[in-house]
Length: 320
Image (cartoon, rainbow, N blue to C red):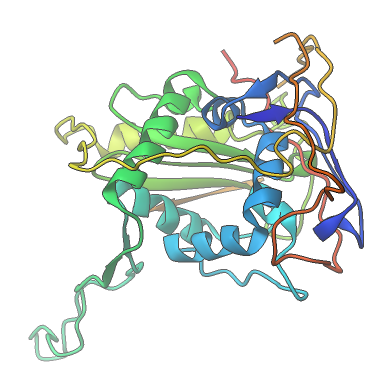
């Protein structure tokens, strides 16, 4: 469990520049699970989790899953990496989510599957069309992620992507609505949709009358693309693994730190170019007692960073 509450970090990795994290609409629920935080797209929970796990470990997992975009270190990764502050390509996102779709097996993206030489024969010597694959997650862990992301399509921020077949996915929206994403997959196919401006981070506050977020146009585009792409394909369910992950109790230093939960009442307002890349409580929680002389900092390694992380928000509620 973590606390959903505004986060203020000015120790440990946040010493050079204090870091403040809030939700899209500044509403919070107090004690919550990671699953619920995912469905609400609650960055305050994931920010605390990143501080406890360590930004370097988050970056390492992203790399394992398929993200090849450079992730700057100065000298360590900034903690906001855990809530998407590093700009990545649609191909990277498609590749990473395809790893979940493939039950934990990463496949290097492939643009050319076959080459025909001038005289008509196929070039079979260069390995065209032969996927390079590697297991990077257990099937059990990948399935647990898929279950949560399935729920997100059915009842979370990604309901706009639901096209009637088993699917899993997640929305994403950057500060000031400058970028909006939906990455999702079925057992057969992954697709990632990005909306934004190639020339820079230009806010999308009024596109056809609404502010663009991941659960709006990106989810709708993904829905229409998958509906067409899988129209003649059989409906498949995600395979259940033979072995499931085991869990144990774990408590982090930032789990209940960095802010106070105050009950709030949601007050929602109104909820370019596009790219598609295909490949698949009212009561305040009581924190555990602090240890003597305990300092609030993330576990090593990340000490200081130079570049200040951007302020970060989360998704609006899904558009009905």
